[in-house]
Image 1 (cartoon, helix red, strand yellow):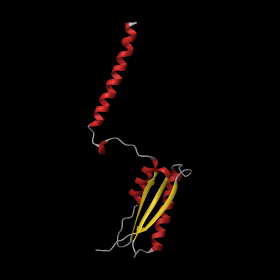
Image 2 (tube, rainbow, N blue to C red; image 1 turned 30 degrees about the vertical axis):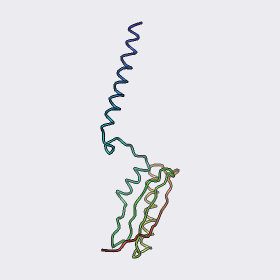
Image 3 (cartoon, rainbow, N blue to C red; image 1 turned 135 degrees about the vertical axis):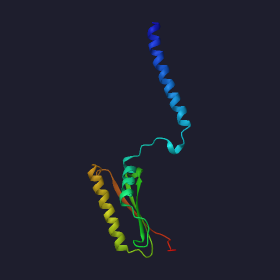
Length: 128
């Protein structure tokens, strides 16, 4: 009977010790260094921004980036533009961004749930 009790107590003690050490270790890890696993939508937004983002410049006159809206299963195409922006060129870029998202979604079999929205906004931008 004693040997059975020892067989149960020792593993339980080891598990509790390991959990305690792990919990105490996390107290000393800075927030920015704690592990985090992005969602599919977050990864897609990161990938799209890395490959297709457009920064505001005098040539295009608009900025285009991608934002994951997780509660909506949506990638938001955010476009900020200036008074000098060629709207036709900007609209072509938005349509191309939409097509790229559709291609990414289809290649991962996500087209059944992923949605795409766009938001355009006039920026208060003056060239310095």
